[in-house]
Image (tube, rainbow, N blue to C red; front, side, top):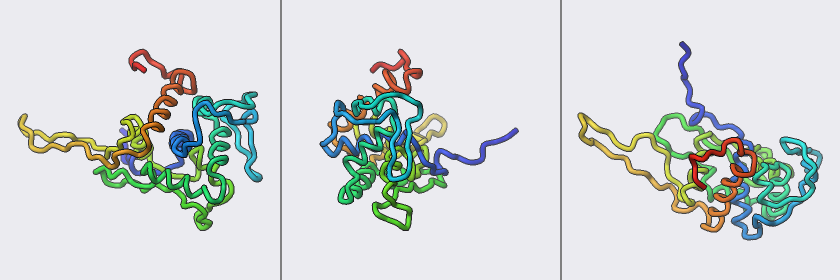
Length: 225
C-alpha cells in the first residue's frame, strides 16, 4: 500500500491561479470606484501588457461586458484590465498589496499542525523579487503569488463568514470516557477583513458563478441560495 506522507494543503505553497480572483475583486470593490454593473473591454479574450500576451481560458467574441460577468466567466483579461485600470498607476500599485494584507493573505493561518508553508506576496516595486510592469496584471489572476490551499480556503471562509476570519482548527473538544477534558473554541484572527458592502457583493458574485458562470455544473438543490 502507498500511504500519504505529505500534507500539501498545509505544507505546499503554489500559485493559486483563478481562485485568487476573489481577492482581486474584493480589493477592487474596496476602492469604492468599482461596481458590479460597470463595463470593461475584454477584447475577445486577448490582451497584451507590454510584450506579454494574456488570454482567457476559452475563446469567445465578447468585446465589452460587466464586472459581474468578468467574475462569472473567470475572465483573465477582464480581471487583469480592471486591476491595471484602478491600481496600475505607480502611486497606486502599493495600495493593491495593502488590500491583500488587509485580507491577511501575507500571513500563515496559524493552524496547530506542523509544517505550514509561508505565503508569498510581493512587495510593490521590489525589483529584487521580480516586480515589473507586468506583475500587477498577472498577480490579479493568481500568478506571481504563492499560497497554500488552506490559506486560500481560509480567505474564502472569511468571505462566507461575513468578513470575519477565524483560525482553522481540527479539534473542538477532547473527551475521556465520555467526559469533556478540554474544549477549543474558535479563535478570531480578524473581526473584519473588508467592508460589509464589499463582502456582500463578493458573496453575491460567488453565488452567480454557480448559477450562471463557470461552476454551473456544480449547482445543487441541496444548497439554498
